[in-house]
Amino acid sequence: MLTLVVRFVLLMSWVTVRFIPKQSIRKYIPVTILASLITVTVSFIGVHYEFWEVKGGAKKRLWNILTIVIGIFPLGCLWIFHLTFGKFWLYVLANFLNNIIYAYPIVSVLEK
Image (cartoon, rainbow, N blue to C red; front, top):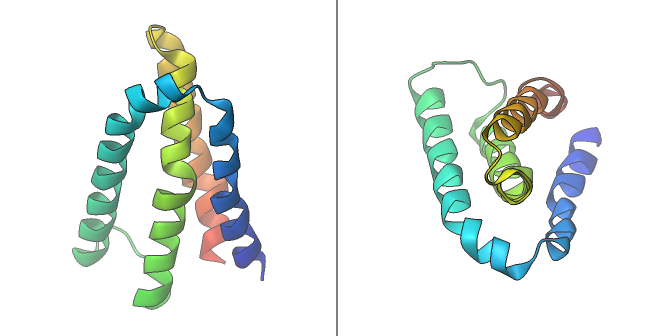
């Protein structure tokens, strides 16, 4: 049940895209799509070649990967690029914090 709620919240976070100017969305959507495709590819390759262990069946793995890659990952890319464009060190810090949040709290909740 908790996982379902987390997935719903992650997908509903797309409501915040209304607060990003349309010009920024047009400017950063190509890099967002590219980053999402790379993430999906690495995720599927990593699971196939057993670079990491993912508990559950194929359906659960697919849902977990798609929840992150379609849910909050592209939105995070858009917000990070919109807020940090032209400020490299702020971008590095924001990206680092974003990756830490994905690696520990979000993935551990989705594992349950």
